[in-house]
Length: 363
Image (cartoon, rainbow, N blue to C red):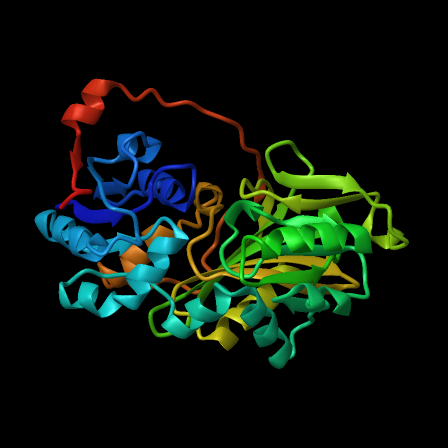
């Protein structure tokens, strides 16, 4: 069978793009993978069959360069590997489709809601899902509204890997870190800290291009391990039901993987309520016997390679459905168990950078 040409953008930095590359390497399909990144020193480029350096997503010529590479390589399907690229590709999806390039994305309104954490919380509340207290902060005066601790401060938009996210346990900390975030962002969100550290899950849902549910999976995260937490501090509040340690997870998730119906069932309802037509990834905790969502990522997850290891390969599913026209069985079987992560290294020499990577950043 002739290989299917697949492009993955944003393949460096240990992010989603690199995870998609790992998934494609595990696929039984005949694939030729074109990798792109804005940095030539990229592990993902070393994994690709053909590699390109491209402009950053905010560059005016980004879309033109990506389409040019796709056409040169007869790319059938394009996967984005970073959130800035997600937004640009989403806003220009018709251009890609008109050039015969499949982009397995959720509708624009789903992406807009999920990429803004305040809009996410409003959607959940309006649609009857359990919602913790939350506040949108646009000024120092808004901080006065917060009458509960502990809370989590984080950017409303962006903030991948829990960047600039803080656990706050009193008014003094709130004032200090609140003013710090207002110096960086026009606005940010404050969310009530809910659940214990050992009740956190990342749940994935796949819907087909018509919005029909295909399958779901979850990882019960071990966030207190070294790689998997961004912050961990002693609980000094009166809310001892939250555990002795308060923690914020990092972007490196690991733990027990399986169906976890208590989490995936509400995750499915959320995805269907949103109107998802691709992957949705839901970050949540179980609190007072209910699932409380604190973030929704409208894309393939950073845990996609973990899922692929147990037979839930999201990129492969989209290639089968949207390129090959196969019908994907609803709730297909996959394995369960534990997956742990570590570190690995890749050597990138000057010969590879000079002879195996084409620089299109200045096109």
